[in-house]
Image (cartoon, rainbow, N blue to C red; front, side, top):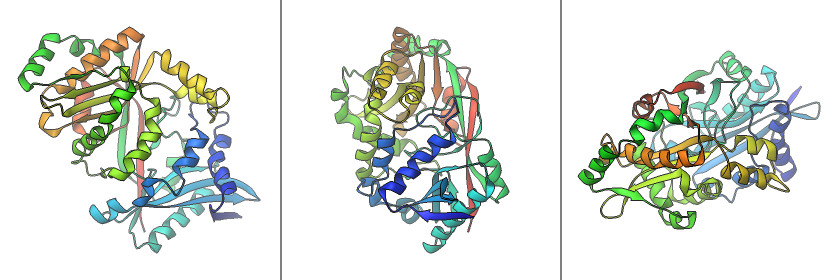
Length: 372
């Protein structure tokens, strides 16, 4: 018999966080999160929960935790965008469709209790969290922000009547394929002169910090026309600053400003921390921090996380400036390959951006929907 229980104590939350470490203990592809960071993300005091309601559920059988899921409601999405949706995420379970059925039945009940009409997931509390269940690329190393899951997850959801709602592609690119656009110095100078823009040169993260809020504002403007985008609220920004800024380095970031000093475009990349996270095994201490430090200092694989550009400057060649700057830094550091963040299939602008660099699709992921 499978029992579903809402997480109500720290001990139960610990069981919730520990479950994937059991499921993937023998997987060479799963990248574990930092346990402390997970605990902090789920803390009710987080600013994210000013506009989000979340419930945490664990599934047990014979006293053993065998599954988990988070059901959440992003009220900005529901009230401002008119989407009567319950999000489900952080889904993990042993290979038994009955466990999934029991978990999702509880998520469906949560949706009905709040007069909502459908479920979609896996996805997080906002668009800055992980989204999309892996459907291809099960033998590829996961990224720090990518969900990894066994192949039976999407199969089981389909059997329970869940249909595909959105799809993402992930590309891998040889750095040498960026060389043509990065070496077009004459073209870059023409763009700079025509639009009176220039690169923002940061020597440290301390110098860059005052501009982080501008980056989030640009994200909201860049992706506003995507049907799946939910604006990032100002009070949520601190949460994501704390979550991701520790992994950033100015060498892997390119920002462009206009003649008034306003940021009009940025590209954020990071060296791959995947293998370092695997070695850390969910803990910064005693040696996890050292593995992360080494990954930042010496790495030949880069991950492309975020691109933002003011709509006025889109299709004007501005991306060539950021790619030029990043390519030069990548070459100095011996970077050989680049992996993109998940790109929505409907985001034709992003796909057009990458198609010039001989990309290879090496992962696909999807969210699944069910009406209730």
